Picture (cartoon, rainbow, N blue to C red):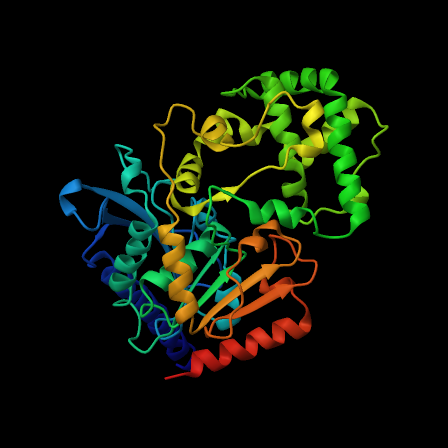
Length: 431
């Protein structure tokens, strides 16, 4: 009898869990903007993960302009737990993998929502019109999804917006446009730029790290350019093998790969010991260049999946330029000014840049950045584009010493992690 009773209890618990999961999915399917819900493989941390398509307006100020479908991944941990709201800046393909979990979901033991950015991945309108790709529309996408999804969870749940890189930019922008949506915002390595070719990054590269490493970087760049005849052959060979094509000649592709090298080197936290001597063979020079800033970045094939990023760069987000002066005698290009439309947006109608949105974001956050945490890596060139620390705002900055664009809470020092955990605990307990 006891064995039978235990089996009945186990059976009841299993059916109860299935009912809870079904209830969550059923509530999800009944939300107003949801078109489809598909359960997918999930990380063992969660009860279930759903790939959901939301119907969004192309232009939130004018519904007559049409709609598109936006992909969102929703992972259910516990309906009474906090919700980590990932404001992705690109495609969210990674969130479909059963191995994916955001570090904050683990830290706070929370649910997880990943929103793919409009005009990326599966969230691409059928008819691409770049007019509707604005920061304000993108943050309103987040607002609409949040208003729907908060019905799934306990009304007392805390919501934490977070994003990395361009996703970090989105987190900051979302905080500026919709300051009352989130309880906490944590932006990783996200800049706020004010020019298409923001000079702060160029100036940063002149002082980052130590002088000997910067000299070694420049010597390497010069060595590649001085061996350009041999290396261009290697670029052509690689491009043929990989089926890369470009909107500019091979020689210019090499120029831009070399100019990109110093930015990419510091951005991704490379080691100066990796840089080969300027006396090695052209093949060795090329192999190292390929490992840091290869020509694929400038290929039509590489650009296609992130073209929307470059549209946003020349429209509102801004980007960085290149300092050509040290290499002028060895470059094919006369100038790198205005390179983004030429290299990345060939065939796209000219787009006029405005820093109005960036100025709005800066002004708003500086006035009141309450419960906003911004995390940066000391050696990451994008840190040059961080909002400047200001005692008037309530935002908090953390900079990892010698950190790169890969800076995360989990790889910061024990002291910094402890400080962030304590701050998070305090914010999560606030009424």
